[in-house]
Image (cartoon, rainbow, N blue to C red; front, side, top):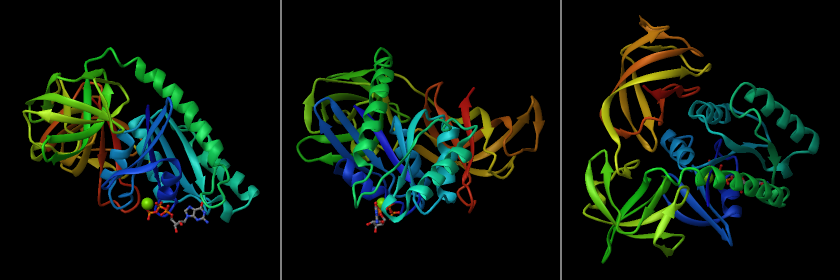
Length: 346
Ligand SMILES: Nc1nc2c(ncn2[C@@H]2O[C@H](COP(=O)(O)OP(=O)(O)OP(=O)(O)O)[C@@H](O)[C@H]2O)c(=O)[nH]1
Ligand SMILES: [Mg+2]
């Protein structure tokens, strides 16, 4: 199974495309569309809350192995740019540009747009991503798009198989109470294999929980491996204790103070000591403050766009994380491009 985000600009045909690729499931600021055909099992995540909500965008990206960036055939815009910056700062590896509404354009303009996408992604980790033109009204390109998704899906399955031996970890996106069952959470197994009756812990609240049952696409399962979107019934914890992004695993770090190595986007404003920012860690997000900055090992008052620096960040509440997680710093009020920096935890 593979998880695929559908992102891109407002009114770019994201939801129409999602509807052609899967059957609508859970709906919130992100909407799930499921596709099951033999071994080809996909969960598409429509970031329908974006551009209003960056949380919707980052949740969709961080729940997925593959990103589909929708660019309307009418041309590039600032929101597509912002999606590219987010994927680049997060270090996402696999994806495609989907030039949508191809029926409203012509072959010459479509290939010019594909060239423009190549040009703006040069030097980012998206520079090799292919572009494909589709229309959900004439169905042009839809089958070809599915083929490309399946090919990326096979790569993803292999990559996830390599993570099966790691300790199990589930990233939670939805949680609710089901009468007669109790606490049910939805999320993705990001590494390892979970098993029915596993005793794990919910972080950052450090609450023990037992996996009562596991479902994926409405089918009961005894185990679920890395990359699987699951629904879990839990014992020992209530749904009201959960928040988006909580992690179920054996062990996570929890902290509200982070030493980060940051790479600033070229398209942001300088980052300064004392700045109030917003931080995204997996599916968790919250306000934070820049406590200190060092550039080239020396204390500094600010860091410039495009530069690398060390940052001490203080968050409003505890965040659960593991060593290799990437954090994203954003400025929610910047009207142009809200992502500031991609960070690793030191
Ligand atoms: N002609 C044409 N219209 C399309 C196509 N895909 C979507 N549309 C129309 O474009 C509009 C926006 O499509 P949506 O799928 O809602 O786009 P979206 O990105 O989900 O939009 P928001 O979530 O509202 O930002 C709708 O009126 C669709 O009917 C297409 O391939 N061709
Ligand atoms: Mg939509």
